[in-house]
Length: 404
Image (cartoon, rainbow, N blue to C red):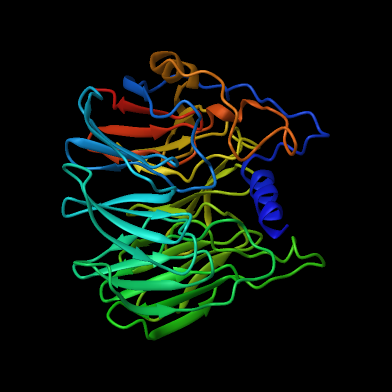
């Protein structure tokens, strides 16, 4: 029952379109005065059943290859230049997070709490480690440690060469929380992780001992839903400062070495924030895009033309801000004032790939009515040199080249 509640809650938050008794809101693409254009390089249909949005199966990239894992156990490598197939390997696993590429090895988590290492050149299994609970975010790696978040609240440190568990940090999970975890951040010799109780914790990369702990957001409100303060989005570090946001809570700038909080803002987001040399950018729970001063947290601009579209976390790329939305539209925004500079509609990628409508294996008509969200951009755009790799809900992976 709790599992279904978490799925339903995630659906309501991620797409803000109501339940089966409510007609879905269909928003047309936001109006754009074209100042920037990008080229759709290629688009491939990775699987005809679509991408499970409750799993973090975001593509991994090298300088020449994009690696993709499917929920059904298929791993594929495609050339970044042109999208042709390099290799495919069908495995018996049910992947739920990854792949993470590190030193020509792909690391993937499964819904049965397995962490598996594969040779990135062939797909051959190198080793397999059984953990305590489903893995919902991609593993993070340093020279000799793999850091994994499991769905039971644990942060686990494993040895890179063979996957042996070196340490485990356990944290109680609230009775009600978003389905998912914040991706851990490796900073120097420490691991920093956000939790569903609104707390941020730094652990020793070597042995998992606690360095510091701080509260980003405190629960408030009358209902359990109102009191959810999950830190669910990835943490972002810039110049020794961590930028973090919480659902129903705050956005904060935190000293990565000490845990002291420089500033907070009452801007809630389950997606996380990013930063460049001057500003912090985030998409709030309403779909509004914010730019904040990095030093003070004060508002520089706010763009509300993408409101109610439940956009991805922003990406700073090619001196612009890039965002995907729940209808599959890609937008480019000005870093200076947030104006919409350009737009790539979802149908270009879908038509090029040959994708059609699909029924999600988790969301059936027993719980949700069909909506246009099958075209949603489900992960923030992934930058590789002068291109972006985009993942759509209907199983399409596309490559977009920056304009000359």
